[in-house]
Image 1: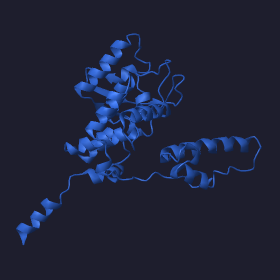
Image 2: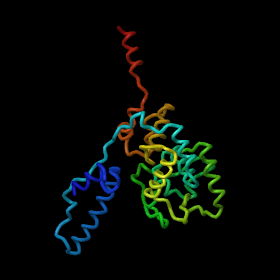
Image 3: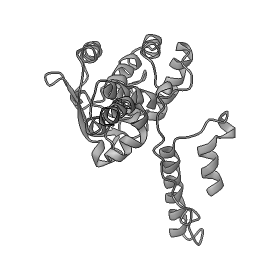
Image 4: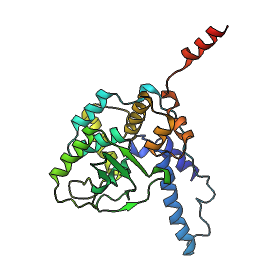
Length: 258
């Protein structure tokens, strides 16, 4: 079990060496543990082999400035995408939503009059049907202000779909299903290949969003709340490298003192 977890996180040989995110490894481990628990309850095995394996915890890996998506790359991705993925990319880049959160948005989630989107749930992962489940954590529940350009894109999207009811998914697949994070991840790879943007995932939109908040002078608390992080320490652990450098200013303090 430990070796399996390491392979998933380090790079899967059956998937061109691509690794899974720590959160995905934990999700798969939990699902497998549930299956083994059922097998124990039914008397097929004596114990759950996952129970003795320490759960992997996600490290707050810092984001280096040179790895953040540029404005040119963002536009290349948006221009390479078809609807509704184009509008979903715009929303992800200007609101910092996770892929599952975008898939879980309902029509009523976007309030045009308040110029904001309410993030209250996420897609349950089955894009062939509609379903919702709780967010990653309580702090993931949040309201995010939207710029006028994003509101215009969403309004245009809804104008094309006048039959969408308030409680129904805001975005739907070609066959009317709900977008899952896995389905959106596959679509991202297609768009990224077309746009010639390498080394990025949907999560890169969150990093780009956070980096621009920081560049605009937003506090750690604002960035934490907008991204739905559990604590400010998580935000600092990931984005401290993007914070303004105070080296020169602090040195000037001592130059004037001595």
